[in-house]
Image 1 (tube, rainbow, N blue to C red):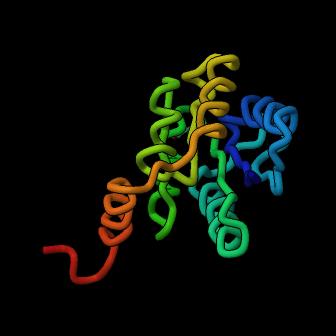
Image 2 (image 1 turned 180 degrees about the horizontal axis):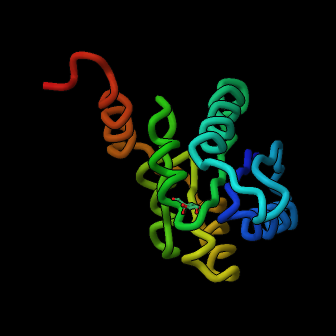
Length: 156
Ligand code: RB5
């Protein structure tokens, strides 16, 4: 399993902490994006787009590639990330949802909010996401329908 990771200024501290956790769990961090510290203000849609484009490119060869995005709430990152076709990003704040966005929704991006979560809870949420597996079956059909939502001619 490998991760592209990014944050804006609102998520720098948690980004660094979670990168350390991923490495502790032997999960590869293949790229890191965002400011070096919280004093450098950046726009979260720019970071989300950069991280997700890299993730999507990599997934063609390494399907075990995911992304972690952190901002103040996680919401801006998720809204931005979900604009890219092929991205399935979820914001989570409880362990059950962190697991189920993999198991049922086949999420490839987890979004967390530094201003919402304590660091131990954030680690636990990421751990749930990392250790969960997509169940497939009826959920695969639903994920296919998610992907079809953005296709031309599906508006009606
Ligand atoms: C930045 O101040 C803040 O708006 C951002 O980190 C995030 O919470 C947006 O969703």
